[in-house]
Length: 63
Image 1 (cartoon, helix red, strand yellow):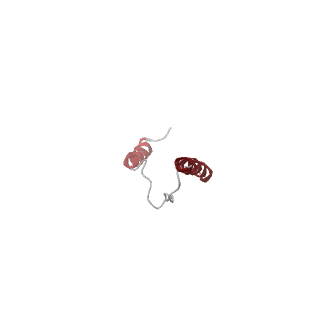
Image 2: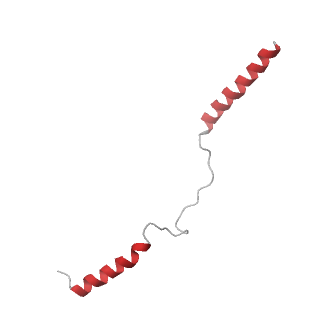
Image 3: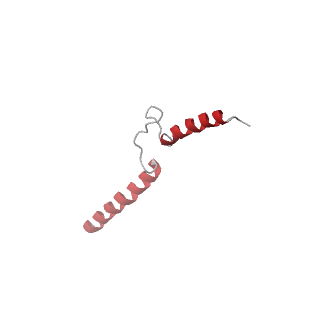
C-alpha cells in the first residue's frame, strides 16, 4: 500500500485541480464560423413555396 506521504501529495495535487475542472483554455477551443440553421436544399424548398405562393396569389388577383 502507498505510504501516507505519497497519498497526501496526490490528494493535494487533485485538490488544487478542483477549481480548474470543466474550464478549457481559449487556445484549445475551436472557433466555429456562422452556419445556416438549415441545409441549402431545405432553404430552397422553403423559399420556393413562400415566393411561389405569393406569386400565384398576385397572379390570381390580376387574372
